[in-house]
Length: 364
Image 1: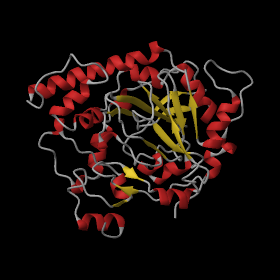
Image 2: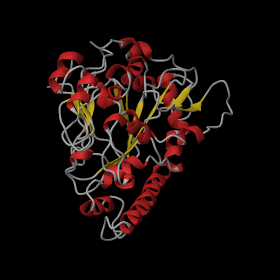
Image 3: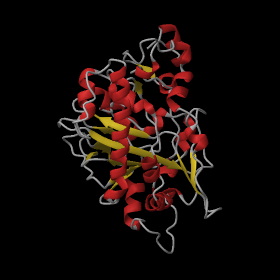
Image 4: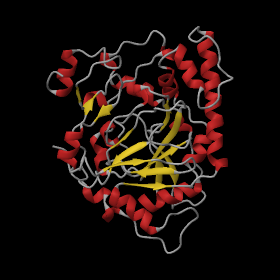
């Protein structure tokens, strides 16, 4: 049975309002909604000049990846004539799994850093956790190519990927689409107030042919008191907006049924004095402290650790080194030790009954 910590995620955790609002901060009723509902949609927060550089940085990453693929004979051409919302799909036609390679690059361009540490955004995060703010070691660029199972994330709670220390830490996430996110192209759904118990429900691994943990709807209803008929909320977000959610609320992304790629960033924060819950593989990065108003972020240590390399090391007893790591389209990590493995696929293929029995106490 998981521990329960409702007081960490509900309205009693809301910091007191400051006597004077800082630039970008949200009205108190919006902040209250975050704590009461577990999420809140904020529209028209970012200016185009703040998000457009992210798209340019992604185009640069695609240029680099496509050239590497072409040189190794993985794709037929560079597909440079296709735009931001189509090029990766064309690359995937030649090399299925290209989205996974891009996901694993883990590069943090300056444009991403600028959004993550945006002054107005950090001022909002201060309303959620206070003035001491660290970026979490887990952040993601989501490459949701059309009608692709690997980019359709099932129901889950974010802490299900982390160790149990995270169950006692509020870790707000900003989900930031780089296109108008709609139900058709795969926006997010949340389980309204599914965080209220302050509990992580029992998850399983892995969803379909992916590396994702999954939370069954019956379990969500039983353990988290979610009404499956009335609590499931679809969250379309316009370009320039964001979805703020906490690490206990169940959420998923819908399939992308459009013809364009739905790109997005998810960025997380927490108090730097609390455990990051990332299985001691990587620390966060201090972004703001009231102890030093002139504090400058030091990215060196954070960028010096490749989280995907660390994740593979964590399960190295069941993995053989990839013969071609630059084109490896499998992902493994600590969550495979944490939850019962009910679906075998390319990501779990090297697991054995003996290994799974030693991890989970029974054979999956």
